[in-house]
Length: 112
Image (cartoon, rainbow, N blue to C red; front, top):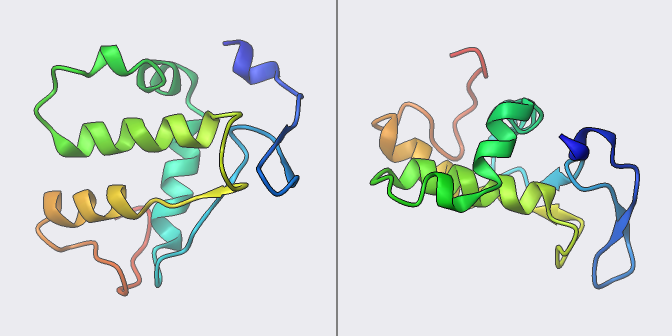
């Protein structure tokens, strides 16, 4: 819950300032719609707080759950290598879980 009120900027190794939780994500060939959904979910406090503690989902057999948790941790980290993160692993798991309905290189809508 303290993350909701954090205003302390972090710095990546290049000295670029960023606010954890408000960090850019790479667009992997028309996956901007996924980035929007992930950013929205990253700011739902109960969901975010659950996934910021990996022990909460450590026993899950779902790779999608683990990749989402990893990305949440990267988005909210104050120790990022760069001031943007890559959702590549999560996008790959979404592709598998959706039976290729959502794939890199194919534009879609976040409401789907």
